[in-house]
Length: 258
Image (cartoon, rainbow, N blue to C red; front, side, top):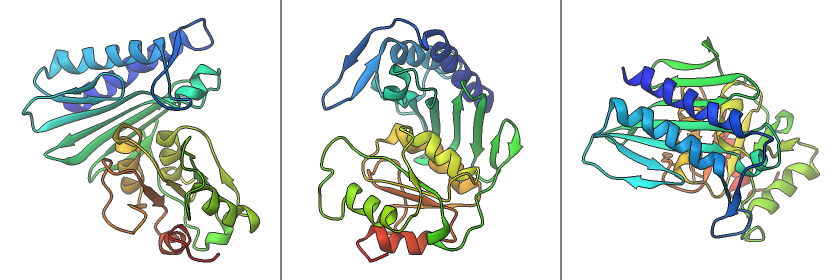
């Protein structure tokens, strides 16, 4: 029941993305630079929460736009109705619905759906990860210099010591391809699917990574914070990889030479 509810909620949210995409919709800016929210965000969020509340009215919900709907349930749904809102607002189809499900503080399921590419990612703790119902796994590269990676940049503190730009420059100057798609959930799913070998970012919210980090782990990869410690979606910094190049990547991220 809970798996089918997760899938249905993700699909219903995605219908709203499709309904609004490349149409005339309202866009506003939340606090901070380029922190957009659209009419579609609110419509998708409502569709998602309506599905969850119909089946599990007592469950805790944490959603990007609505905030927290607090209960004493053991279950928490962590929702990003549109991950990649700036892309969506500009008609760029690299965006998705992302929903993670926690039980007693541990992520147990995640779904990420980009309806514009017809890619539905699903992961369940201990049961692996899939793309459109086909099992996926991380890449097998063992040398960082040969990797293709993805990252994201916050709109503030770019010039902090050993910050996003400094780390990005280290790789770019050595000719290592590092992409920026604009959707952390898709970044993580593409690591899980072996398209990218690693992802790192300095500032994420729980709804950005809740489903995606489980996807990487269940596809055989490794996810930590930037110190190499246990990763929780409630912390900002993340390093996700195929596992084989993780330590080498961490050393660079932590300020080492490359």
